Length: 639
Image (cartoon, rainbow, N blue to C red):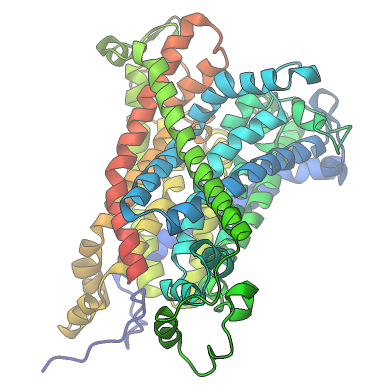
């Protein structure tokens, strides 16, 4: 006689009678989860500890003063805080309306195939490395800003506005993708009921779907804000890096047309190397990282709280929210009538009134504006890719891929840069995979709902942590405390930690999409929880593991900030011969250095060729993962 099936939740969190027994699988999951949570807590504690000397020296003036002169031991970060907020505000003002408008078109008006094509383009836009964005910003965007606002007597195109516009393009995929997901999560039945009440298609979206998706849309904007606050490399290349520059005319356009500095761009500069030997200066620099971590962490956790199941569930909007011309008459009483019955009855009746002609034109204009947002978002992506490959195609040759760098980047190729990048991301994959599997099992199998949400918050925070802070953490731990110097292993570990949320989320989504009957059948056959994990859940979730790994590798391959202080140099390295003082060359750092001499004609061709090569690697990884990722997402939504 078969044993009864054990009830399971949506995430297969089984409360077995022998739950006190510690299996190897549970120990494995606990260790992986402890490493992940410990890293987040350890980063906060380490930065706070390292910041204490400057707080004792400068007190509140560290935050409220505008004087940053390290030679005189004066450390005031106010201008960097203001610069960070200004750049992020410009980015949100551009990206939020464009992203939400594009999401309305893709989720509500485009057919399935067209929506898939737009989704693919936006996913590719999200995968472009920040250093490539910075390169495009240097050669195109800052020239555009300088020529457009030449009447303001600009010193250069490196301004707060330039950095904000560049960040807007970078965060646009986040706003658009997450807003699209929020809109598609609204039940179609409610749109049908609204159409039956006489609302047009756009009115049903604006008065029914969008209000119910508002929490998800707000969370999308907040997550995009977190990305904008923490971006270092792209902003570093176009913001001008001017210290102690507070706006003198705050209610005019002038502050946006001046050079500035952000917390992240300050950490990405050379001063962090200067501060290394001065304890007080070092504390001041690490304190900037702590401020950035607090700002980004607050925004990220707020977004995570909004997207939690309890917060994300919006009540159905009452009929009174509809426009007056579309409200039902007295014969359309809704008391005691279910949504399905109301939809069926109203679908057989004509609309209550016809839309006024003026309203028709307004709706056509609105739909056209949203369509323009979609074209703008996809057009920017395609234009960037075409520009990079057009400028870099002349350098792409067999010699370019098989020779080492010569003449400080003006000649030779990128062979050892490719080898170094592959070594770093392979190490990152080896570090990330076991930890991500352990965390996914803990969240999906062992934890109850409330604890699983808490672990999800940790993953949100880790995923939202700016990459420059990973580099700062590595500089403190691996370079300063352990004495490794620049080491490929340190870079691989940091990149692996960055990949954990991406791989874990892909695994958890796949585990949620598994049919419950698989788990019930395994438990009914007498398999223990650990046997069920390794015989059913992990094999059936391998597509999520592969997809998450590919997406994580795509991100790791394009990262500059985590490895620039800990693992990579510009020239002089080949194959590493150990761990201590064993740096490697890498493609992103190569671009970052050459981009600062982008007007030198000797390096221009090699610079764009390297950017094209890096983009090919990232796009290839993203394209391989995209079909499986979309299928897993659709299965999870329909489950």
